[in-house]
Image (tube, rainbow, N blue to C red; front, side):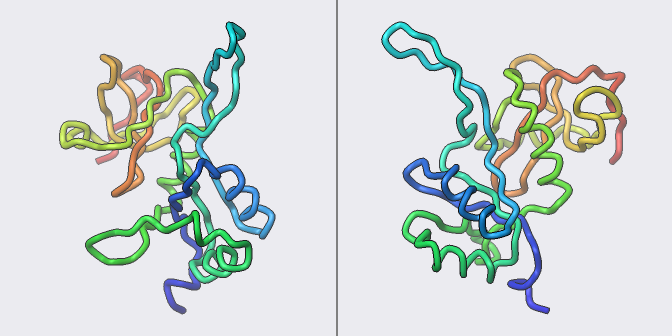
Amino acid sequence: MMDSDILFWYPLRVTYSRELKVREIFCGSGCEAFVPMTVRMLEKNGVKEYRTVPAVGNLCFIRACRTAIDEIREAKGLKSYTSYIWNKGTRRPITVPDKAMDDFIRVSETMREDIVYLHELNSKLRQGQMVRVIAGPFSGVEGRVVRVKRSRRVMVELPGMMAVATGYVPEADLEIIS
């Protein structure tokens, strides 16, 4: 069995803010798809309105084998505005491990105001200890302890791509798992 026949989470770069359209096309084709969402307040002509919008622009995660993704992209005319995100070292599309993606989805789906998406990781953020949250809304999530906006959080990293940091997590709710 080749890598192209195994189910992985593939992040796809989607241009022209068509993340939701791409997600619907892949879901309609029998694939699992995820776009992290957030609630934003928009003001137009003095009227405030809350809308659910993609939290990270131009990004959609698809769980399928690479062959199926390529076939759907070809058949549905998505090739012109979707592309894989490539690992420059291996010269292959980036894949996200199931556990990391499951934790990322759990944190992202809460759509809490204190969730922070970290698009560019720096070396300071990687120095934290590996922990598992043992209580509260993020129970079971594994990640590294980081400080963002002067608050202790757990960062769930999608290797080589980005990360999401939970809201404040009390020290008593963390278990070290090195």
